[in-house]
Length: 312
Image 1 (cartoon, rainbow, N blue to C red):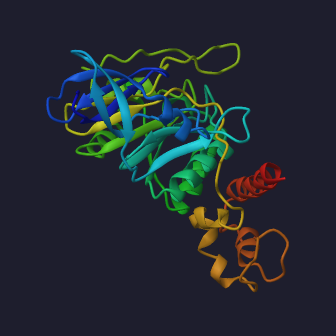
Image 2: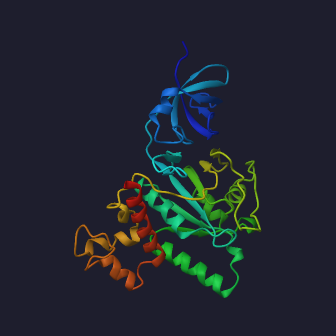
Image 3: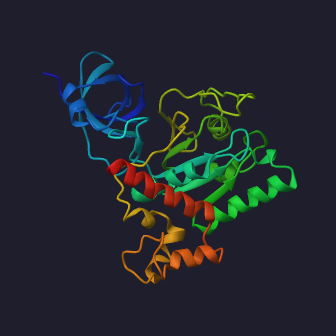
């Protein structure tokens, strides 16, 4: 009878998974046992990159995953067009980096805020990488960039300006990766693959271009994969994400995951204030004073509407 072994999931292709064996460091191609699919029926992907698992060898370099070990955290979103199912992006990560761009393509602030809320809910620190900063040249673009940076830094998030081709911000990014399991995420075309190549040129990463017809990126990463870095640590590269629907978050808790809004909540007149219409709301007063970003507050309101929609 085959003995059960433990391993780390380093790549997912949907039906097969690449595991790194804990004892031998060998790479094993595994599928999953049927009952694991049933256990993860609310998720489109029961096993994800970053999972620690038990598996039974079936051949020299193949096997079957029999158990998913407990996760300490994960990044999860609502599966595309499916209100009842979720899609887990990665598990057991120390930190996340969200690559964003204000041009070619433009990253929507609502998308950013949804990602940040999910990370806050699962206690995953996020650093924003504002990429392609060399493209912001006009006075209007520079002002937009500075306003964007101020909004997120004042909300409590670390932000690094990067231009991979010119090595701007790369050292600051690289030094934060050492010895940690990091997730890199963002829309298609924002420059994730270029940033990974700049951090570690030895990695074989496909680099794509942005379509000139619609300013949207072309997918270069098809499946999530974890890469060992020359400077220590692992970096998880994920396919570009178009949307980020939240799941399993109660609207009474959503404000808690907006640290820039939540810092004012204890001053509200009502303990159960929703920060939408109540008199004596400290969050709305801070918004009027310009101490809370309007785009962040609007993202909060949209998340409340989403929660109502999916619960009716």
